Amino acid sequence: MAKSTLDDKRILAIDDERDILDVLEEEILEACSNVQLDKATSYETAVELLKSKPYDLVILDIMGVRGFDLLDLAVSLNLRVAMLTAHSFDPESLKHSYVRRARAYLPKEKLGEIVPFLEDVLKYEFEPGWVRLLWQLRDYFVKRWGEYWKKADEKFWKEFDEKSAHIKW
Image (cartoon, rainbow, N blue to C red; front, side):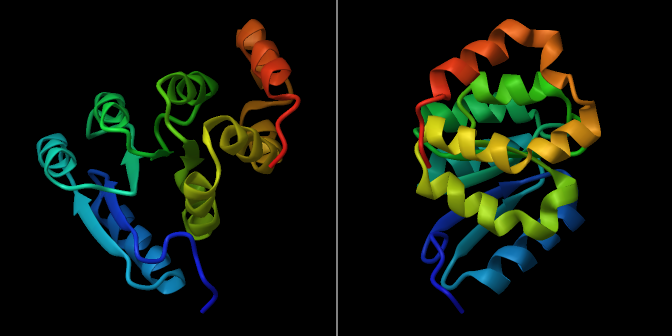
């Protein structure tokens, strides 16, 4: 097994769907070694875990567990967060995740490919990580949302593109 940036890390996965947590666990443990993975299926349990243990990475569903509230808490604790969603997968939630300082915004459809995305969350700082993520998922976003998905918030995305034009990853 190749070395992963997730090796020897403590990860918290939060989702109200137990089957999603099981798939996450399977994907992560298959690709990484000595990972401690805690799981929560409710907002209350997630808050308790976030406040009681140090995590290297938090994987967070948006719907069902008050994901954006948990994102705010995790960011206030200086934790790196990857948002993972199906029902709230839209350009507005993508922007909302970025503005609230999540490190990634991933569709649950990509669950089988999640490890490299999570590795990038630990490997890259905030802006370079987002530039890389948007580049990697550009075709997926266009397929899901249409070629002009940035049009609805053109000013924001133009500023993002200008600010990040110099970033190399």
